[in-house]
Amino acid sequence: MAAPKTLIQIAGGAPRIPSWQEAALVIIDHQAEYTTGKVPLHGIDAAVGQIAELLRQARAAGAPVVHVVHHAKPGGVLFDPQGPHSAIIEGVQPQDGEAIVVKGLPNSFAGTTLDEELKKTGRKSLVIAGFATHMCVSATTRSALDHGYASTVVAAACATRDLPDPLGGSPIPAADLQRIALAELADRYATVVPDAAALA
Image 1 (cartoon, rainbow, N blue to C red):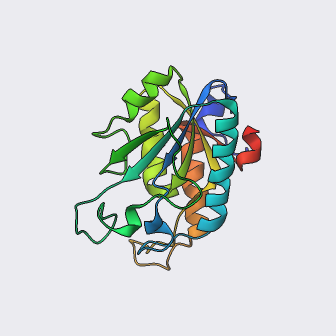
Image 2: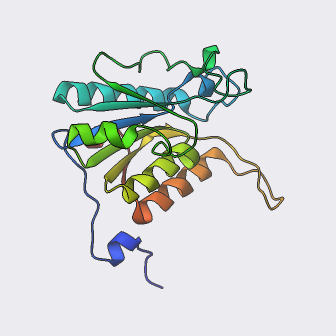
Image 3: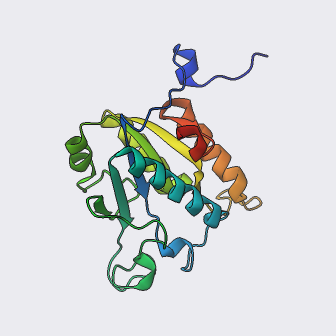
């Protein structure tokens, strides 16, 4: 049996990693809910370190940076905009001039100003990082294709958590879910690179 190929490969395409001179960095939901809040993620500390490195690279190159944050209803259980866990994680906060987009759904383009902010940059290539891989990173990357952007997802700068099996089997480990979510995106929606070093 032949080795599996992505739809991109079957169509004759190949992964392409953009330079910082052509890309914008989009960081999704890098908030304390995932570190000290109710939704801790597997490998979150290492992923935050990778995001910090992406920020360092992008800023050094003068690339646009967009920070996307999730705000639920005030007083809610998760991502309460008035609570401490909606804050951006220490060490990866925005600097002056970097856009902040607030969302209320997994897809960062839905009902937000993200597309408008990206159009201001004139760039059609995105480097995407953040949380959680299977949820908001996936939803945003899929929607980015619909909006005409070419995405690169940095695997080590994303993280997720164990999930229950909806069919009643054993829980799905975060490591397996991470691999599957990234494989799904690499099939059609994005180039997936292992870590920040791939962009250096």
